[in-house]
Length: 446
View (cartoon, rainbow, N blue to C red):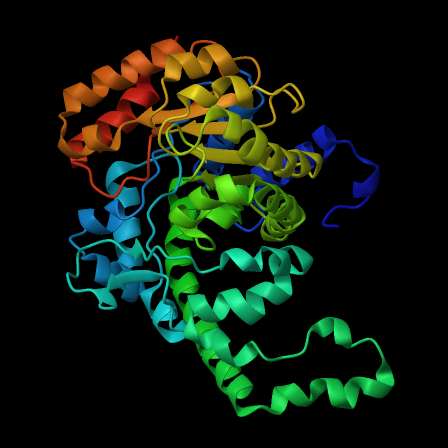
């Protein structure tokens, strides 16, 4: 493990070690002592909120996505293909808005192009307008009769069936024998023959090219985040940790919305069996991503569990048990689950206030949920975050945002355990509304 004596520690001790590493920020070369002080003060505010303490002030964490590029006058295509322009845009956002936590990103169009991605469209690849965001192409990428294959061996199923449907680059790898064959030295010379297949070689070549393009962009854009930390003390909030609710793995880009709804009536047991099979895989993903320096928060965007997507009974029996198991596993590893409840979760609040999960171990980010109701249900149990509306930031006034933020803070932040954030990722906003969000939150006290 990443720490000595890790196996003998309880979850709180493990988390404290991760918090200490986050505060230490060993990878950041601070330009001044003041920048180092600000960075650590901002990290500590988030830690206090997670632990249900009252920070020196409320952490203000607007979730800024494409807005950084739009503010700099870039099209979505430029953001996705020109790393240097995107890095400059991120630096400008940090300079002009002086947020306390880093923000701004766009997906890598060049990598998607090299991989031959089929399950999303983006400017230049299925979308003609350069300034339209990318979109999923909703289909049943996993056939209903393939549940048993997924359950038996998810890794083999992804390589042989799912990934070639998602992206053309994986077609050449579909015919390779499973690595579990490689168990006998005398058979190795036969086991490896598949790697001489020209289709395999072509796929590997394309994957290497895509990986190099990914690393190149990460270095350029990552330098903008490093600069924000080093010069301005702007802290890393979310880190690299990411996982998905097991049900959402099935419902998003495997079965799709239409397919999973049919399965609710025809294959309920298969949904639950497959979701349970996916829990350790998503946990392992989160552990590997957070093995390095940085925030121990693990983002979990929740897509198909919102009000209106399924009944409360289905949520409690099919969605929540495996999500809870995943978060419980994260907590035991000292990680902090950060579920993003997209849409409304008003009918789910009783279910997620689950006493099987420790107090002060989760951050719930809410989008369109009644925040007073969320505070009543989860206050003293879990930190909550949210939920300044994205439409208010896009078309409202600075005064309207100030009034909304002030009311929100009055309802949710008085006794701690609250992080002020946008309800959704900010792609469109007015400069004055975003500044009102940041400045009102920073100046509020009680």
